Amino acid sequence: MTATYRLDSTSAAPAPQNAPPANDSPATARRAGRRATGRARRAETRAGIAMAAPAILLLLGFLIVPVLLGFALAFTNARLISPEPTRFVGWDNFVRAFTIDPSFFHSLINTFAFAAVVVPVQAGFGLFLALLVNQKIRGVTAFRVIFFIPVVTSIVVVSILWKFMYQGNGLVNSFINSVTFGAWQGTAWLNNPNTALGAIIVLSIWQAVGFHMLIWLSGLQTIPQELYEAARMDGAGTWQQFKNVTWPCLRSTRVFVLITITIAALGLFVQIDVMTQGGPVDSTTTLVYHAVRVGYSQQQIGYGSALSLIFFVIVLIIALVQRFLTRDKD
View 1 (spheres, rainbow, N blue to C red):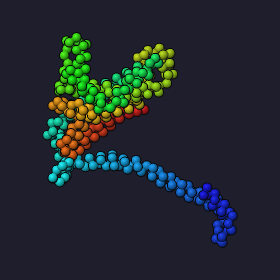
View 2: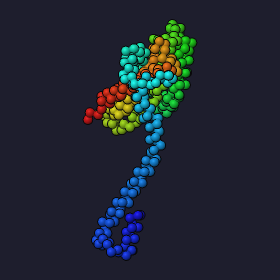
View 3: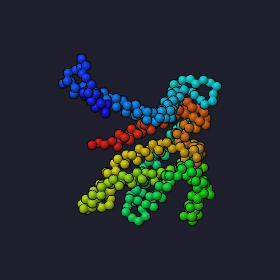
View 4: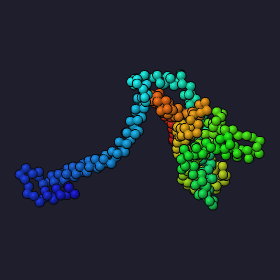
């Protein structure tokens, strides 16, 4: 609109003494058009920055700055309440973790043990449920809702309920006694170092399997039915259809499920905090829980930040390895 107005104004006004020749009018119009376009782009840029500014400020204030501050505190002796000034201690916190702190090794072993069981079992069980609820049978929607209910329930509430169920006179032991006709007596699952972590693994798989079932289901429903029809025409059975059609077509879904389950498993915290507080005798302590306990309960912010930085590096390495192994080789 601005360019058109100037052209009209130029044509209507008397030509000045030093006015350019008449054959330069198209070039002048193009320059005016470029100036107008540049002004419009600058206005759009300013509007975009203004709209993105709140999100950028929130990310800086609640994500970027805390992460950088945590990395910096990892190399100090900072404590929440201490008369001593904070000073730089170099790698002392990391040396302490790998040489002095026995709870660190327990938490590291428990974290990897939890992830080693939860990742394959939860992914496989989720795929099995997705295959079941992907069938065109009556009432399949009800099953999808039932399997998904634990996901939308607060993990804190779920952990409290399962804590009662795992007691010596809880529902789990009552069920075992009923099934075995009293031949096998249960135990207080969370008070036994040999069963506490296993009990939390079962709870975690049950609570989150519905979410991954939904992810697998979305991947299954993107597979064209023509592929199954062609496989059946070639005489492929159920297993061959799964092996040659379903599994290859779920490649992107597999990568997503693998990475999300792994990161969630390595970050186990809420169940531990609610049900066992790391006990008994550190049998359920995880790396994240240990870092939080040291940082806030024991007020050793510097050492807790060092543990968090170790956890960050471990997760980053595992994610990169998974990404490399699952890369598209084509």
